[in-house]
Length: 132
Image 1 (cartoon, rainbow, N blue to C red):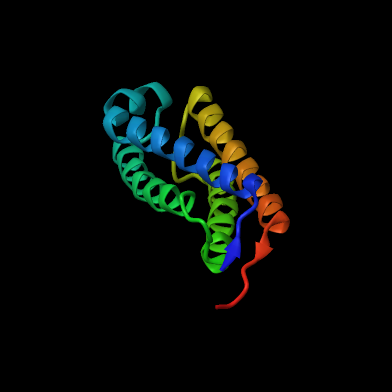
Image 2: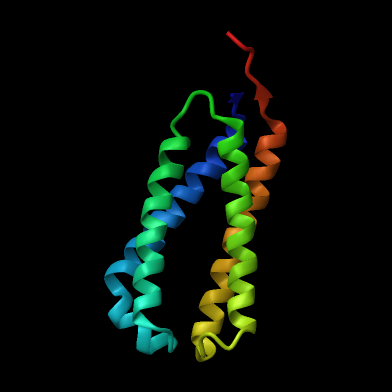
């Protein structure tokens, strides 16, 4: 367990808010976003549902007085992996988004990568909790 720095707590909370809003928009707006971005509706909806569940976990984590260090590391690694997977998606032939779709994928990849970096900085500023 660690005693999270205020910086880490805010970075985790920002992740929960960003993810929650994104998840709701993707889940309930998949039908509208799919033709606008030229991305599969099923991909957008499934991504949204996953992100809602992730936001709930990260939101819970952001409320803890002490945080399991392993879970914080998993969140950071997950955000880094999401960023890389988003870039890989753009470079693959799995989807064929239009320019707006490419921009949307790139912007969320940058945002998630920035959150991972902020969380990493916050983790480094945190203190290990004393074993009780």
